Image 1 (tube, rainbow, N blue to C red):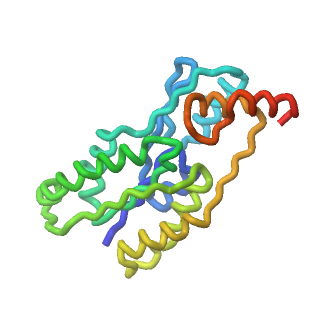
Image 2 (cartoon, one colour):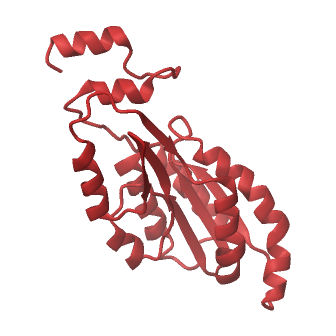
Length: 209
C-alpha cells in the first residue's frame, strides 16, 4: 500500500529531503509589515524575506496555517487518487490551528474520497491519520523522519505505524535559542501560554538575555 506523508512548512526539513522522500507540503502564510509570504520551504526566498525584515524591532506579524479548503483540495484532487493511506503530521496545536484545520478537513475527505476513487477505478478504502506532533520546527522534522524510516517496512500495519510514532514523539524535545526577546514577546502577545510577558521581557532585556 502506498502511503503519503504530509507536513506543514513549519516542519524544519529542507526541500531536497521533501523531494527525495516525496513528502507533501501544506504551506503556511506569513504577513509581516504588509508583505505576504507563502512558505514553501524555498531556502533562497525564505532568507531573502528574513533579510528584508531582520532589523524590524516591532513588526506587525501574523501567521496563518493552511486552510481547511486547501487541505481538502490536496487530498481529494491528488492524494486519494495516488495513495491508499496518508499520515498528516501537524505542528503542535498549542502553536497553530493547523491541527484543528486538518481534523475538520478529514471529515470532508472521508465523506468524499470513495466517489473520487471510484471515478478512477479504485474500490479500496483510503485511510487517513491526522497527528499532532506535540513539537515544532526541528522536533517536527525528527518525527517526520521517523515516519519515513518506519515506512521502510512495507509490512507494518497502519495502526501500528501510528502507535509507534505516538510513542516516539514522547521522547522529542525541541529547544529554540533567541538573540532578541522582542520577537518572541510579539509572537506570544495575548496568548495564555508560556510566552514571554512584559515583566520577563524587561528582566531579560536588563540582564542581556
